[in-house]
Structures are given as structure tokens and as C-alpha cells.
Image (tube, rainbow over all chains, first blue to last red; front, side, top):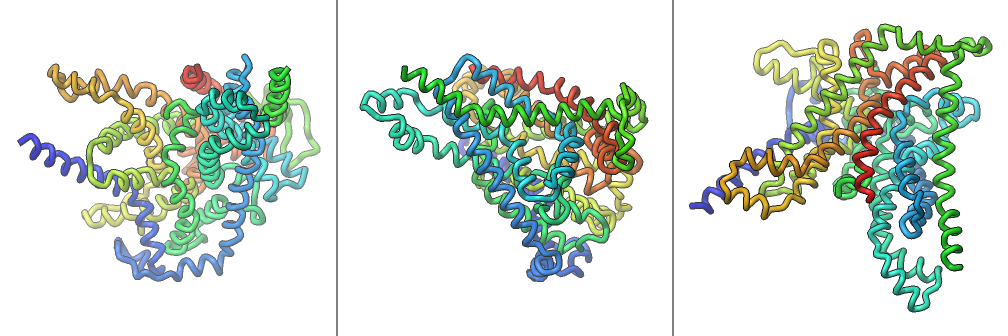
Length: 274
Length: 289
């Protein structure tokens, strides 16, 4: 009796959960479906079954030179992440393993720089980029994206490094390990999962950034976020082609995102929720 | 000796990150502050002069400013209400034993990974378009007149889009908190005859309080800066109907070339964001101890 009712409630919850999930996913699903339609099909009323043509994907690549913004997105996301890691790993390491009485204040201050609204520094950054010739260059934007994500990177790494038990270090020292041995054979293997998670989340954040990429690029260095935003005007892409461009812009990050759910919670809440 | 060496090394390791962020914080903000007291328009860059408080006065007394403040509040509060309420409901639902939980989670989290311009264009063209959108198809199917969403309800439309983007984040964090809830305590309460509602109010909700606070504060920081969604859908219009503070400052700087005015607006935005930030720092700071 009790088992039958719990089975029935499980069926009920399952149906409700799937309805919610499919509703929330529907805009993405419908975009994928539309990207596989012809332009004619795309505007001829609601239909969930496309003709599975890839012509829109081809058209976007040939007519709109899609690979340029795609390459820019990869370079900016990966480049800014690597730069941030180079600066953040030593800092987070030092704060986790040799904390001083100021460490907590420094971390809080770093977090506070993230609170600064981007638009508040639009004027100076725009003027600096104009006057130094950084406007519409990959290098300028890579540095920008590195700076805006640096606090999150330091914080995430710090919370991961802090979980590495200090006793292991002591044990290694007792056994006569040098600082080099300590770093190479003890800490690095334990730190790699945390670094990988941080990297993943930061690539996602940099890929999806859409304020500075739109402000500081025109054509040369424009990544996908700026490229897609330029189709807001009516003379932009047609339905199927816009869908194809959208699918290509979000697919890599969507797949990466599915693998990083846990890290997402941790990274975006600065370790406040684990 | 060894510790002094380590301390020196630690300082050296910390320095680059601290110096970079220090420069990143002080230089642009200092320049914004400086320009906010200058008459400076890029259309006539030679005519730069001291403006006193004029830019602030001009920015604040512009009718668009009050509209922008109002729209910013509606946007932030509207999205927060939708995402927190629905987020709790969905988190409770997918925390139940269901078939295909992994896939359900993946489907629900997906909108968060869609970059803002794509999210906005998907909704603008696929869903809300008055002739070809799915909403229009549904309206016609029901024999109703399709709604021209961005012309008739511009701000509501943007609230819907942004809520769709942030609902996964709220759900995921609230679900994480829910999963750490003590099952034994729940069972004990159930044995003592506490009903489902009373268990939710007295056990579940207090347990999630911290996660809800974090969701509200972090989302607020991001929601104050909503920009791309407005740019690709309504351009802030019709009139100022969907202009928020971020978009107003963007318009002053990039479309009116009014450097002084945009800088004054930027300083006002910093002050507002700081008020929010103070609360966030307190909530997060507790976790450090």
C-alpha cells in the first residue's frame, strides 16, 4: 500500500519535473530545430520537425565569415583564462598556505573590485583604448577579460587550495622534501582538480561576456557575443541562419557547462555555498 | 629563518595579483571621478573645462534618470522575485526521487550558459516575435490577437528574458543547499505529526535562508549591469520605457559622446552598487572564519 502510493507519487513528480525542464529548455530546443529548417519553413508557422538541412550552417560560415568571431572567442576566452591563472595561482597559493593577518582583508577587497559596475568605468576604459590603439584588438580585450575575472579566479583557487591538508606538507618536510619537491610532487597533484575547475568556469564566463566585448570591438577582434549582438538590426540574419549562428555560438559552452555544475555553484558564490 | 624566507616568498607571490587589481581599481575609477567634474564632449574635445557639480545636476535632473532608476528597480526586483520563488519550487521538485534526474538537471541549468545576446535574440525572434514567434502561434491557435511584446510590454519582456537566464542559477544554488538538509530531522518532524507546509516553513526555509541570501545578493550585482539584453531587443525604448541605469550611462557615453555626463552617471552607479555590495560582503565574509 505504502509502496504503491510512493510509486505513484514518484510518477507524478517525474512528470512535473520533466514538464518544467522541457519548458525551460524549449527556447534552446526550438532554436536548434529552427537551425535545421530552410528559411521558408522557419517562418511558416509552428513546427517541431525540421527538414534537417544544414544549409543555414553553411550559409552562416560562407556569407558571414563566421570563423573569424569564433576564433576570436576561443583566443579571448582561453587567453584571458591562462593569463588570469598565471597571476592568480601564486597569489591564491600564498594566501592559502602562508596566510597573514591581512589575508582575509585582501580577499574581501579583491571581491569588492568585482562589485564595481562595468559601466562606471566605461568612459575611462573607452578613452584609454581609443588613445592607445587597443581598440578592436585581441590583446586589449584579453587583458580586460582577465582583469574582470581575476577576483573570481583568485577566490575559487583559494577555496580549493585551502582544502589541501597542511599536515601533508609537514609530513613531506619531515621526510626531507625541499620546497621544489613539495610543490612538484605533493601540492601540484592535489591542486590540479581545483585549477581545472577554475579554468572551466572562467572560460565559460569569458566566452559569454557581452558588455566589454561589444564596447571595445568592431570587426577585427569581435568575438561571438559581439558578432551575434550585431544582428539585432532588422537587416540581420534570417530566422534559420540566425538560429544556426546561435547554435554554433552556444554549443561549445553549453556542453562545457553541463560538466561544471558543481564548480559553478562554488565559483559564483565565492565559496559561500558548496 | 625558513619561515621568514617563506613569508618573503609568499609576499612576492601575492604581489602581482594585488598590484594588478589595485591599478584596475584606482586608475579607471579615478579617471571617472575626474571626468565627472569636466565639461567634455567627444564631438568638441577641445572645449574641455571645469564643470563643478553641473554634470551630476544635469544627469540627475534629466527625466530619463528617474525613469532609469525606476526601470532598474523593476528589473532587479522582478527578476529576483521570479527566480527565487520559482527557484525554490523547482529545487524542491527535482530534489524528489524522480526518473532521469541527471537529464532534468542538465535541461534546467542550460539557459544559464547561453550568452546574453543569443538569449535575447532567441526570445525576440523565436518566441516573442509578433508574426513568427511561438507566442504568436499560440495566440493565433487560441483565436487571439498576437501581442507585440517589445512594443507593448518592453520592460516585462526583458524581465522575462533575464529571469529565464537566471532561474537556473537560483535553482542550482537552492538545490545544493536543499541537498545538505538533515534527513533525520525531517523524519523526526514528520513522526511528531508536522505537516508538509509546517515542515517547509520551520525546517526547509530556515535551512535555505543563507543560500537565498546569497542568490539575492549575487544576482543583484549582475542584474544592476543588464545591458546586452536591452541593446539587442528594445534599445532602451520605446522612449525610455526599458532604459536602465547601465543603458542610460552607455547612451550618454557612446551615443551622445557626453563624457562628463556619463562619468557622473558612473559615479552614481558605483554608489548604488556599493550599497548592495556592503550586504554581500557581510554575508560572504562569515564563511571565511
